[in-house]
Image: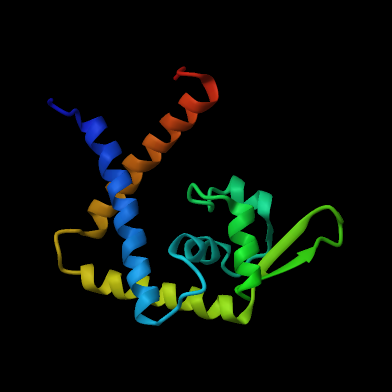
Length: 153
């Protein structure tokens, strides 16, 4: 079967996501970090220096296809996140990184910076990455429209 560029892009996006999570898992394993998984690590990284609700994590798409509440619970249990009730809305729970969480976030930032240095001088230029990002954002908007309007443009 002859695959179209659209179909190939779908497969490549999925494969790249899995490869990236594998790379992150190797990084965690190198440091003997076993109380958090790669998906949880990315959720933690995306919380960053902010304080947010579980709902905000979900809306921002930081859940990466996993159950956000479960992952947040595990990260709180393993002392990566601090969970507090909102002072303004007692029903709302806010999360932020603990010191341990900040250490892991910094480790991931260092990994990203190392990767950027390693990729310099290759044919994966900033211009090509910017063009790729633009195409992916357009595809994201297209899919969001498909999901929101049942197939309309």
